[in-house]
Image (tube, rainbow, N blue to C red; front, top):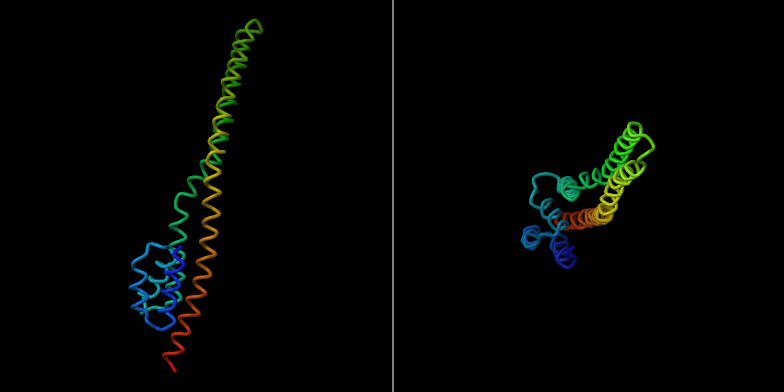
Length: 165
């Protein structure tokens, strides 16, 4: 978040210089500044409502891909367990047909079946770290957006109050 530029944009909003604030904001790719500039450019509508819409759109953009990661975290261990269960079924089927004379074939099949569980768990463990990292970043961004929205409302109202004086 480009806090310095955001503060500059808010100073211009407070003065009522919306075009100058937009010009400053157009230089940035910062999500917060993009939200504020979107609200400022849609002046024919309620700026506060436009700010909230832009914030929701930005949060939705940030959430993109999170469902896929969540699905991977959930499905990987389940697929591993499914592989293990089917492997054990095959091993017991082999045991039933071959008898107890060849236990190595059965234990080898079970060991191979457990590889799928280990793989599934490894995938889930490797995916949950970045997933949780992004969840924390998303929550922080949502809090920042809420603070920014409140600041925008305050500065925007002060600018309008001065115009009416």
